[in-house]
Image (cartoon, rainbow, N blue to C red; front, top):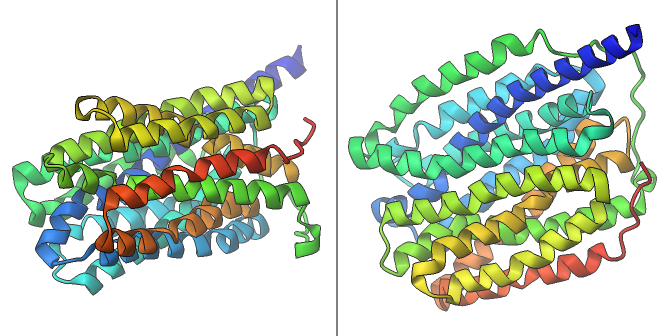
Length: 388
């Protein structure tokens, strides 16, 4: 009876902690996602080419991704989980100033600071989520992951509406609600932090990395390549076709909202049916709807964007949990590898996508990108799933 009560109390504490981290994830990724919906306006105001726009997106993601594994290892080594609060603070402060930039380099610096903030948050938060997931790790991680996707999904609608009403130069006012939400999530979080475990961190060599983790990492890189390219240029493609900035933001929101919902269900399904089968199914189903978004009827484009987002993002929490199971005890480092470095390598495609789009067309380049999930799905067939 005592053991049951203790287990129930631990589960409640885990869900309280994950709920607070859900809010933190929504806050961090919501502010980090301000860039993409404002990109059409920034292109016109600063005279940016699509190549320069792609470089900015790549720089933000690359700085974030390269820092995440090292910061994740720092979390594992020092066991200072409250680093999770510093990240959203940097992201909120940096992205709130985006409307006051006057040139390419000022925008670059803001995106770099926001990238560092995101790099601080993700591995520390994922490590805390993994600390008490038990046999529901897929579900718990999916719930946490949904926070970031929801934040990124609603952010385009909110920021476009705000700028439409107040003007682009008024974005510094966004720091006020951001810091208020940060306080709401950060203050109670310290009461849910699990007790520190005294252990001596082991050095991790490249030889110690399991081969299935390397294969899984490449699958996530390929999936992230497609997801990142469409998330960055989807609103631009809508405006190129004659749509408004709000319609572009709505399409991006639909793309991301369904991804959050899909990730939640996929995480739960992976606890029952295995990580491999869920990842394969969701990844391979993404490509047809991405192509339909580009070439299908315009009046159904919102529906196609929603369906594409549902499948391309569903495997995000599943991949994180699968990687953590392959290398237990290194949750911060592994989360940094698959949530940060893999996404960053995938984000490298933004610069060549922008460069090629300047010379050909954005639609034709995104067509090629939409076929990449087929390659990722083929690779996952060779993945040997960890027994749980």
